[in-house]
Image 1 (cartoon, rainbow, N blue to C red):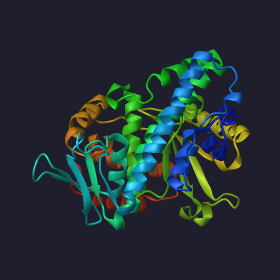
Image 2: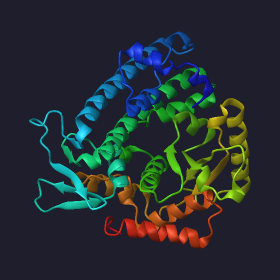
Image 3: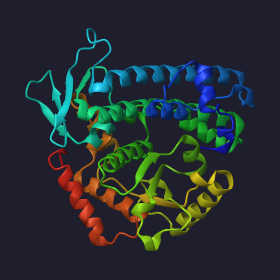
Image 4: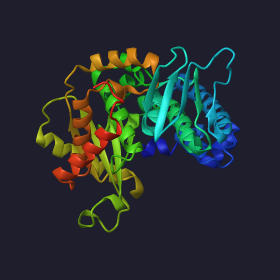
Length: 374
């Protein structure tokens, strides 16, 4: 997050008092409150009046999400969750434990069921409405259900926060950057089918990598960058490798993790000099204005050109999702799933040799056997 934007935020305790919301110490609600980025309007300088009124409406929406999530978390204490208004929103999909994963039963089509992993279930929550979905995961599945609820709330709040960031940056940055933030503002929260191929591809790739991380098949954590990182630093993703996953010979004595910035592109050829400049500029600029725990240690360009056009992947996902509980990664073919995983391993974990990478790929293929169409 840009330090100039960060300076305009209310501290967590003050935000609770300002909006009249009590997290009751629930770690998910505390995380969501911090993610929501409530503003200190006394520090908000240079933002047009009409934009300030829109920002206050975003704050109200964020509070609504927090309140709704708190009710869901309370209901999910014993591993079950249903639509709030079941009379008008009857359950049409039921998600239940099955082996080490889950089964999604389509109650409108008797006998229709889909098997998914924990990572797939959590990722699907980002992209699907809970309106007609029921969860019966049992007490042992209560923590997973909390993660599912968190994923949906994080997605919604992140979209509102990114809109907020974009509006502030439009009014407080040079015209050249303001135009880029304006373009991003028009796409934040859009349906994936309405995004341009580059943005849609970023979402599809992010969906797949998040699943691999959640299912323990990649040795790092992953998140999509915010709109400021995207525009100012050309960063689409941030991957963090914990110290224990780095071989001793490659560890630095003074860091507990390595944080990597990734610029994803559909271009087939990326100039080596441009990649080197991207790496140097990003590392230096981050260190100048960010606290040490948020420094980017390495930066990379990952280039992958989908064998099938991105718009075809999006169309496939848009039609398939009607009858299941899945994320946009389901539109990738087996070749793309494997190649994208290999590219991230090569860039983020270059110390893995070809045999270690191949072993992780085989583990991935076994974990998702029969869960994808190709």
